[in-house]
Image (tube, rainbow, N blue to C red; front, side, top):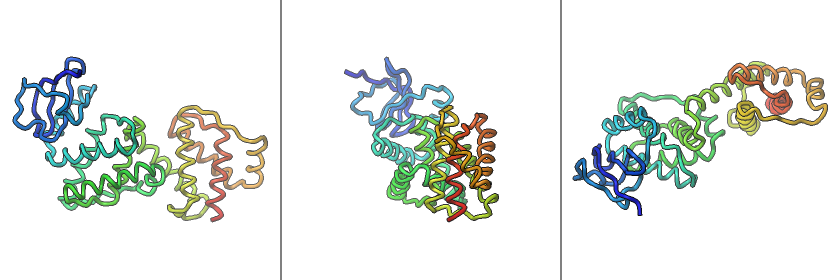
Length: 279
């Protein structure tokens, strides 16, 4: 039988900081959980909707401070949103999402109040690269609309999708953003060299995006890539423009990732560039 929690501090009606004999300091979340509670009192596990430990002390303090500053209704809705995300993917989320996503949405709501619109430069790429996350992010945006009466701009769906992807993969947001920026640079290099304006909604572009994302992941992990014998030689002779462009893009990736790109990546990238050069 799970033991009770001893209250250290009541942050608001729905969030309590408590001590547990086995888990140590924890954040407890539940509708009305903190109402009428006092430090030193006990809370049984049956009353708790969500319990999580922020092992990083700095992050723990940031979350406590965040909860003091953010409207209780926003915190409550974000906890519902995170539960929704968890159910849709059926896998544990990185607990940092409680801090990161709540902070992001609270800031987005403040921007809206002041009439400040924040453009998302990677919206189309995010929707293409993280399709499942994007669809769940749309549900989160709808939840916020229904519960708080606020319509978030479309760009926020992309930002939420990235937060979800970060939590699912345990990858830092900064790393995901860097990779999005790298893909954007590579796309612009392709447009400049090929003399085309790439349709960001075309199937060929979506395939290129997927390939670049996988190529980045393979490069970072050092995965070997195989190709048929004579494949690169054939491409170099028949399609020199696209092949040389693929090499340039590989070099850009190497500098950005500080890792060697496997030579076979160039051949497969050439095929994607061919589709873009002959729409």
